[in-house]
Amino acid sequence: MDSLNNYGSSDEEGPSVAPSSKGTSSAIKINSAPDVGGENTNAMRLYTAPTTTEVPVNIPYSDMMLPTLGPDNPFTQKKMATQNVLTGHIEAEAMNETDFRTQLRTFESYGYARDPSISSTGVNGSIGGGILGTGYIGDVNKALEMGGATIYDTVPKNMRPNQNMKERRKAKGDPSVLEGDNAYLGPWAGYDNEKMGKAARPTDEELEFVSAMHAKTRQPKTSGEIPFGEEKTTFHGTAERDYLGRTYMAVPQDLDVNLLGEPGTQPSFVPKKCIHTWSGHTRGVSAIRFLPGSAHLLLSAGMDNKIKIWDVYHDRECLRTMMGHGKAVRDITFSNDGRRFLSASYDKTVKLWDTETGKCIKSFTTGKIPYTVKFNPDEDKQHIFLAGCADKKIVQFDINTGEVTQEYDQHLGAVNTLTFVDDNRRFISTSDDKTLRAWEFDIPVVIKYVAEPDMHSMPAVALHPNRKWLACTSLDNQIMVFGARDRFRQNRKKRFAGHTVAGYACQPGFSPDGRFISSGDADGNVWFWDWKTCRIIKKFKAHDKVVINTEWHPHETSKMATCSWDGTIKYWD
Image (cartoon, rainbow, N blue to C red; front, top):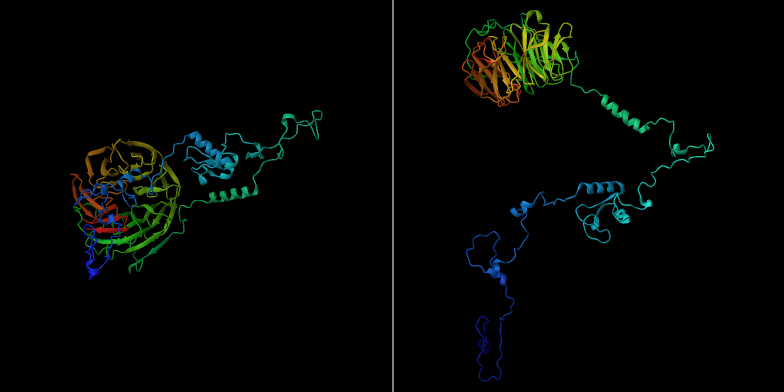
């Protein structure tokens, strides 16, 4: 019990003294929980972030002013403001041009240069930039040996890098000897190892290298052209002839449409829905043409180097594929009777094909890319066609002889379109030079030159059914109208806009009666305008990519074919 009476707590104020017990001479003090000191002052401290704006409790001033603990935030605005690379900040070093050239030449001659990141260099024992704090980069040992001399400093002769490069001159000789050994040469003495009277020639290794380079350059750059005679054609139908011996060129008679009638005799209407989709090209389709007259066949030119003929009625299948070009086909055009057609390709060739058999009849080329081809519409000139090329020329070919009979060379840019007007006595050409020019056929002189400061390039042109107006797609997102008679003036009262065609040669099209004009746009839409009022009648989504051509059926009242760079051809009604 005495031990319990002597128990004291360290939390009590003042020393704890137990009363002495009677009968004991000395009191024993035992403290089982002594105060060991070492108070942890951080245990009761409140830690705050440097960005804290409100504190709910009172914090001593000494705690608020303590230094920030932990690593610095690398993404603070203060650091990001001075950061000019992803990993930190690189300081720009000011160095004048003379010093830079000096160090560059020193490095090229001696193999070392002064580190530009320090202003002073100390080679012996100094601590700075460069390799191992020497202040130099490159061959540090040589820099120490030469004392950091630059190209302009004087160095001992034995340390110069070009000490053995100087050629030694021959002896001047004895002035008393005129010929033979030790003859007097004077200031005309040559150098040792000099080849006098010997023609300098490259070494064998140099000759082999030059011949190899010439062999590479001599190889002709193939344009992908398929030689004439190697063209292929494939018929996809069941039989090329029916039980009466007729091919697909025969006009079908089992339809309720008069395919031999005059186009435009019936009023046309705007199509509403897609009734068929032809999908056979593996790449975009650049042009489509109906067969002249009956329009029961559709010809298409694709960027997959192929030309296809499609059936418009009955099964609406692909009838024939012609493979004769090495690159994308740019343009196609039929002759008046539709028995033959021309194709222009980026392989720099124009080829004449037989529509019925699919065979290539002839091939023409000028060595330049033809952008457009057109037959002369006159019946007595069906053996002549024009080709607008990338070399700014319009070339006239004779199919019978295969020769160039005329050249029209006035444009300042690639020729994009050719359109015959005025009873086929003249034709209109448009070019990348943002001009429109009129020509007399077979006379290479411009009779009308149309160019305005606000005009843009017009890569697609369509002729109105009355043959009095030209609708030209302008690359400033509008269709402009020009007269097709004598004056060829722009009709500023007619302007069709609203669509986006900048950068694309979207071919406009007219309805057979001339009441409507249509065009595709860059977003895959087809637009329709009224010819008289120039108002937008309708617009609908037709393809996934740019609609490059809209072709109206000449005998149907509301049917139209469209082709796109998505590789499909759609038939609308």
